[in-house]
Amino acid sequence: MIKIAFDVSPLQAGHQTRGVGFYIQNLLQQLKKDSRVKVVEFDNLSQVKRADLVHYPFFDFFKASLPLYKKYPTVLTIHDVTPLLFPQRYPAGVRGLINLLRQKLALTNIDMVITDSESSRSDIIKILGIKEDIVQSIYLAAGSDFQILRDAKFLKKIKTKYSLPDRFVVYTGNVNWNKNILNLAKGCLESDLDLVIIGKSFTQKYNLDHPELRSFARFIEEYADNPRIHLLGFVETTDLVGIINLANVGLLPSFYEGFGLPILEFQACGLPVVTANTASMPEIAGQAAMLVDPYQPLEITQAINDVMQNNDLRKELVELGLKNIQRFSWSQCADQTIQVYKKIINGNTSYPFFV
Image (cartoon, rainbow, N blue to C red; front, top):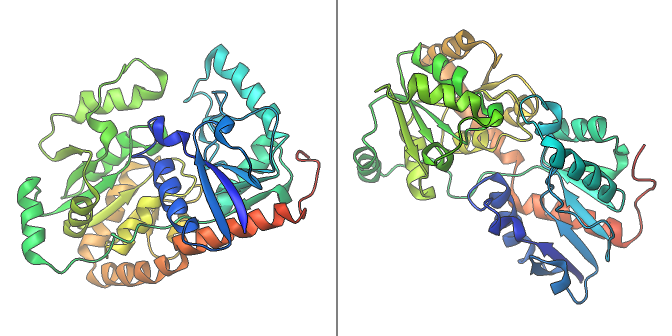
């Protein structure tokens, strides 16, 4: 049995309700079921008295989150490199750039990097200059709660509770620039459907002068008072699944995603998906989505209209989506992660870390 020390500090640092938190919670749940490993959680490495391996499930480019010197063999999950691909949209500042240099130095002590998709893997290798055989992609999955609901009484209750329109597009996510909120809203409003937006970050208070939030500030200015846009904020999973089941289209036209989890959540609920033709989204959606140029709002509009006006297309997307999600599971994610652990423990990794 391999003893794994697993860093849970991101759950105390604001990531609990975001993708990182979802990844940590679901992966841990599966790892703890597996007799091949024993998991010890920590939020400070000094708490760990003995371990065969340490797993850091999140990498912050601009904060000193990774030890410079490793005490144990180490696995690191880098979900994506969005801030490094779009530095003009995610300015690091002087302190951030200093921390980035420090973090890159800390990377030289890592035995293996796990990431969420082949698209993200390619970007990590290219942007960070890490050797190909040190980076492995392991897919995430939708939660088991996401499924087609047949309970008409429950769905009616959800519709009433959130004052949902009869026909609508649903988006789940945050306010970051890469989410393409402005074009998402513009493209949807040109169709004949309302837009329902779900995400804790949409109802939080921010300094809207911050460079990363300029597009969100424009969104608030242009669309916050539009009666066809419904900002719901954070929604518990049970209700979220109900809302997705009531929607007509699931929309994720991001400029960039390391994985794009909402695609699978929409598909698991029997919802046709419109997503971007960039980064990981075609990889994750498979053949089960309408792919659009995220920089062209009219393409978003056209794709939504096509899905709504063509019943055969809609039915095909739903059926393909339900098949597509079979490629992903948390048990598979955990199994492949354990294989990485075993590979490191057995000394089957190659050095140096960087090309």
